[in-house]
Length: 355
Image (cartoon, rainbow, N blue to C red):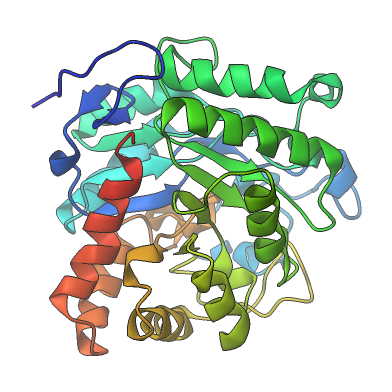
């Protein structure tokens, strides 16, 4: 049942804004808080090592492992643009018990609101769309001259009127791109996001840089600007922080900590040769530590699927992995059902509800 909120811009309190309109928060069910159904993550020329890829064969079971582990260059791997594939993968997720997906494809990554709406209508899944801009290198050069107020006004309009040239509204801010060192442009976008959050009540999802101290730098920046961090989600903690002390210090700030690379089982990380990725078992140990220290209400889990080789169609785990494999494994590892429900249902519901 759709909610009937006050639709005055900035006043849609108490509902969840999906690409098909507002819904009652109680309808969300098990939720993936950081995914990409449609995205073009093709690295810009400044980030391509050795020039454009020469090999563009179809992804098969014979080459998907090599592509996913960096042995083969394949730019199409960064392009999720097949709506029929997305529909199939979302249906598999729903068959495994999932109900809602947050798609954080935003400025610089070719967001497709109409495509998301089509997937939602076809599958019956709830899809919540992000807004704002990704990291510096992916942003439109025109953004370099824009002001904080310009970014804020854009995000407010995306949340209250419609995004990317459509009448389809975003329901969350982000993922707001940051890197280490943090660029001045990215800081302007962040300041705009904070203004938009204060105006609309939407949560913010942040893509931090890959230095282990950058999540704390972002939190300090937000607090210094006079904003709270209780509805600020720091993504990709499982590729950023690898020691308990840093993790617990970050949790003590009150921000939301997202482990969103579940399903990434190999140590190879193409974005940085200095990072050895954890597997799902190690991720669950980090989650367990936070739960045991009283931070359960600050934890989110997702998969951040943004390449073809992580889809089931192309030899990967797909959006179903969290519900088919990880949720049952949590119970085997000593998590209570209340823990599982808090992380996969209650925390997402609270954060996606416009405050």
